[in-house]
Every structure is written in C-alpha cells, then in structure tokens.
Length: 417
Image (cartoon, rainbow, N blue to C red; front, top):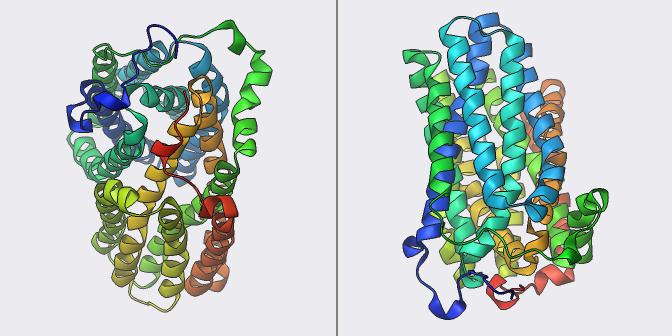
C-alpha cells in the first residue's frame, strides 16, 4: 500500500456506527437520496399539473433513465482517474444549483415543460457521475470485513428514502409546488458540505501505471467483470432479475385497478413492497454473516420466481402485496453481499469503472420490464403477466447455479488492495 494511505486497518476495526467518516458519508447520501426521491415524485406531479399529459410525464422518466445510463460509463473512468471527493462535491453543488433554478422558475410561473425536462436530465447526469465515485470511496472508509455491512446500511438508507420520500413529496407539493425542489436543493447543499468533513482520502494515490487512454479505460470495468467468474454470473442474474422486478409494481397496480381497488389500497400494496425491502435491509448484515454466500445468493434468486408463481393463483391485490412484501425481504441481503464482494475483490484503481459497469448492466434491460409485462397484462391478463415474469426470473436464476457462485468466498476472505 502506498505511503499516506489512510484506509482503516483490520486490526483497528471499530463498529460502523462509530466510524466517523462512514457515518458522514452515509448521512450525506441519506440526505441527498431523500431529496432525490422527493423531487423525483415532484417532477411528474408538476408536469401533470401544468400540462395534464401522462405522455410528457413518461418522457421525463425516460429521459432521466437515458441520461443516467449515458453518464454512468464515463463516470467510472472519472472516479478512478480524478479526485472522488471533488467529483462528489461538484455533482452535489451542480444539482443544488439546478434544483434552485427550478424553485425560481416554479415560483415565478416560468417553468415550461422543456425547462422541466432539461432540469430533470441534468440532475440525472449528476446522479450518474456521483454514484461510481461514491461506490469507490466506500472501500477506503471501511475495512474489508465490514464492506457487506456497509452495503447493507446503504440498502436500508435507500429503502427508507423510497418509503418516506413519496408521501413527503405529496405533502410538500400540496403546500407549494416549489417546495419539493427547494427541499432537494438544500439536501444536495448539505450533502456537499458534509463531504468536506470526511478525513480519510477517497482513493489511493495514483501512479502513472494507470494513466491509460480514456477510451480503453471506459471498458476496463466490463473487462474486469468478464474475467471474474462470480461477478460475471451475478451480473447476468442481475440483468434479468431487474428487468422482471421492474414490471412487478405495474402489474400489481394494473391488477388492483382491474379489480376495482381504490387508490388507498393500491398505495398500501406498494408500501408493503417498501416495507419488505426495509426489513430485509435491517436483517441483511446478520444474514450475510450467518449464511454462506452461496446460500444468500440462492435464497435471493429463488424468492421472486416463487412469489410470482404464487401470485398467479392469488386474486386478492392486498394478499399479493403481502406476498411480494415477503419476497423482496431477500433483495437487500443479496445486494449487500454483491456490494461487499465487489468492494473486496476489485482493486481501488478500478472501483469506479467496475461499479459503473455493474450499474449499466443492471439497468440495461430494466426499462423493458414495465413495457413488456404491461403488454402481456393487456392482452392475456394478470396470471400470464406474472407467469412471464416468473419465467424470466427462473432464467435469471440459472446464472446463480454456476460452480464459482456455489463456492464463492466471503468478502473479508479475499480483499485486495
């Protein structure tokens, strides 16, 4: 390890709750994550209020996804080549300015649909540039034996934001249309300030050996994953699993509407999904510790096809919500294990690019889920939509039967510099 490296040593481990730098990073991302969820709900609400067009609201979501993907690939190179702290602070400040601009536009009644679309696209670019840098920084702030626990804490933070954010956005938007955007702008500004107080460096010192051409560096994350059998198999699993799961909420909502369920019941159904993920994140650290890695992966891979198959024979929307609330319990432990494994096995100078490559792959087919299963629902009904999703998840599960996955080691057993 190079001189001046400040990564925590295994012989001086403190609990994550007492790890000052990790807690600051977690808190900074919790603030900005909640703000992002709030503004993410407020954008379509504002578009619908101004235009009444679901098409424009859908275009907002599509543009956000497209620009997020476009930004993520070069973001991995930037995170490994430049100062990660400065990248993260810069992204937070730029997003704060964009959201501040939205506040002014909304308050002065000058917010046009195109301005809203541009603002949403810019914040998505900031999200894409921020994430690989944050993922790479984590390895420098916690020891290898705590990487999975740190990833579990991240899952819990995201699940809490997903549960609290939507109702909070609705309340704030009702009070004033500009308030959700002000809330998000302040969250980014607070996050940027918090990052200044982290003492440890966010990466190892760079040498000339990593100064490769930009075009070559952009593919290094995919090359690394392809060369690691476990990561290669888990990436294949994640691609198909995320595609299938992305369509589940739509099918649940459409089925509820078809059976005459009111909006409150539909909201409760989606809340049950969020509650399952949140509870799973609380249990993730313990499950990753007491179960073998292969058991965590196989339980995570088996849960969704079992739940989807059961849902075929369950007509009640609320019971379906309960079933999927139980099913998604195993998602955070699987994500925590994957996050810890990547943090341990990937060298620091590749952390940004491997995180970016995995994110791109995981999101690659995700937009197809709602469209594909929506079409199946419209033409063949609820049962066939769940059956199609179950078939995709079963296909995804075949990747987890790989020999290397069955014998994968714990993150703390294979940490590299």
